[in-house]
Length: 318
Image (cartoon, rainbow, N blue to C red; front, top):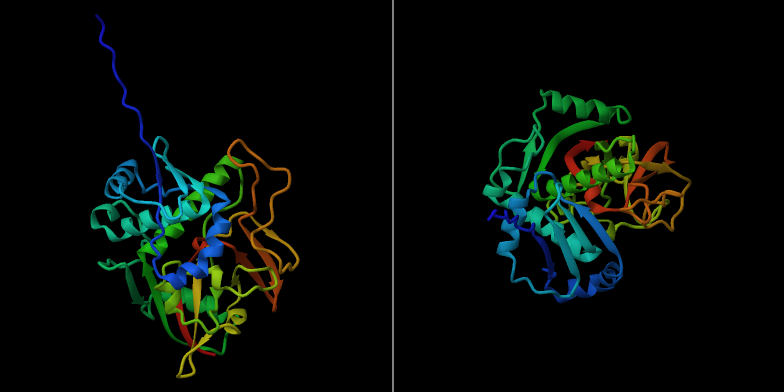
């Protein structure tokens, strides 16, 4: 009798994710947002570096997760890159958690590719002073001085935050997947833009759980989003002022993707939908970001935290 070859079924994990925020005040603050998120669904693509083996290991160590609130999540490891589907809140929590564990696990982090100019690090966060005789330093200074010629650069520090970068890379991979699905011709590569934090200490961004956080952004000319400028002179007006009268601003890597240039609209909370576009995967498709012009500078707005990474912190005297 001919033997039949039994092919094991690929795993599709179905489970619920618990919010790790236990502080009552935090829960009250975000409860309304959580309820809104629970009514929306999201499809997320994990980074290429996040293999089936990594996801399997993650699942085994988190199989006792309980749900609060009970949002259903589906992780399909039968495809590469791995696709995560479910309610937006659950998907966001899952992606942050697995990215954080990869960034902080030496065995898993071996498969993660960080920027080539990063120096080796043991901790999740390292602040590295960029040498003032390096090409890296001079490139940033020249860009900064294009619109701030009379300023004095005090220091330029490279932000090496593995957790934030993995979230950023995850979003980068997602945009590439959408571009492929839509057969797009735009670039998904990050663009370097300036960002001032006003009264927010930059450390709360580069050492925060979410990096740039649009939940705390004031509504501007293009709604409630995270604003970046092509010109340093524009961001200087929003620079964080130190006690010694120096100022700080970020030079960030921003995933603009397929953006749309529009007139100001302070009601925006997301980029506009692309008219007449739907696929077998997406019922509707939105632009990735918005472009505007104000204060003699092009400005770009993203409406998702992981679309920007705080690459450098520039300290200067105006």
